[in-house]
Image (cartoon, rainbow, N blue to C red; front, side, top):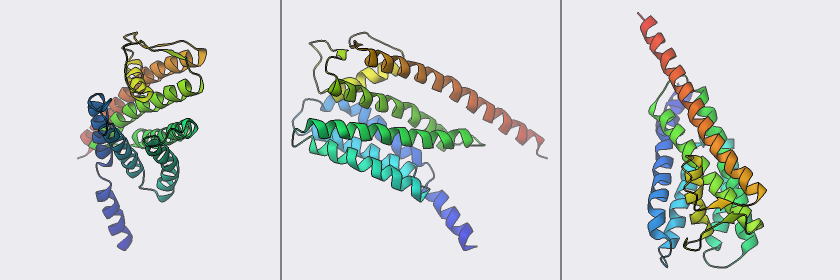
Length: 229
């Protein structure tokens, strides 16, 4: 009885857990363009990014081991991100980006496991599917920023573009993920070309496979409902 009560309590606590992460990411993407370049307010961008980190750990923390690994990967990124606001330490910044890529990849894998193992389509499954797509864009933006830091000149960035590399590559990542491709920022090096191509392919494959999976689960769910007396 006690074990069942604990299970119900955990399920209640983690209900719609992906919704918090989805809202955090949407706020980050929506407010980022208006915060870039403002002294003091630019730190608010890090606050929203920190909220994304915390929400991501919470989203996969139903298992203690998963939460611990996610936390250990998030801490170096968190510390590097905030220290960059006060002191210029390029190597520490690049290291935090590397941990950010590992952290986001870890979160994406666990959420994908939840989505593709789900036997019913719920709000949480839909929120999780949206979150993965947005996290893929953020993950690749970190990858582009890291590549440009390690190999300056990997991308052609127009003179008129202002802002930090992180903000510019947020923009570039999402227009690549959606295959919109305005062509204002372009890859120049072989690694940059490969990363951009891979993101575009993964973005399209994810949508195709996700839709197929959700439709399949919906059909199976409908057939089960019809077979019930």
